[in-house]
Length: 298
Image 1: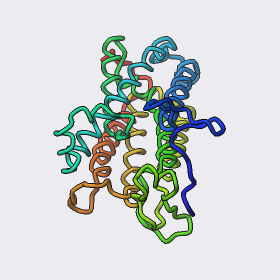
Image 2 (image 1 turned 90 degrees about the vertical axis):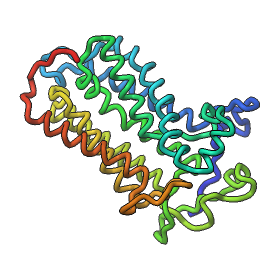
Image 3 (image 1 turned 45 degrees about the vertical axis):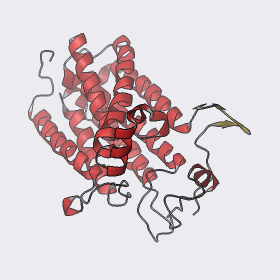
Image 4 (image 1 turned 180 degrees about the horizontal axis):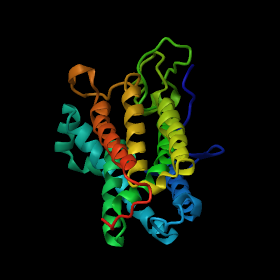
């Protein structure tokens, strides 16, 4: 199928919501939707008393409200720094361009965000917030882990709308030709993905890393009551995301300018394997401890 002609800038009827260089884009709305819905879901979790087995929830709704700003900054700063470190500095052309024009590092409106960088930024935000509020950092992470797939889902759908991060060439009937008038106009009359059908890997990721991972974590919170097992939900998230991302890298097109890593690995696999290993260790540790074991704040 031909990729639909979707403008990355939001329109109301024929009117584009754009004022000079400022524009409201679907990608930005995806971030907003993920953060707002995740915030409300986290508040619902702390208000759901049966999930906590009669114990005091990790955080209050007011603390969750404050944490949202910390996490938002972690996503943006970490996502951009991660992209620079993991992708731009490894790509010789982008590295040279960044050295010539260092201010390019701040142009996040032109694209270039790394999930793994955003993840590390959120980890840093949770750690700092937990220390400030004297909350157990692993328990706070357990509260945020079930929320994360919501933002991932909207982010991957926005990647598809933008016609970016496409998959490898395929001859399957569900392949998508990522070429339309908007893409050609933005790229001087050409389509970077070429004329061949490709896997819509963005939608695969939205389904697995978003919908399926959310369902797994919902089952863990609401059926297994793992909010009472310190580190179990973080471990579940890390294992689920690391596994899904590593598998989907086999159909996702490698990032342009990346070197040939050994064993056919991609940058996404290299960054996801540590997540998988840490997640397995956290799950193993959490399931060995009694569910009602008390811990002092970290």
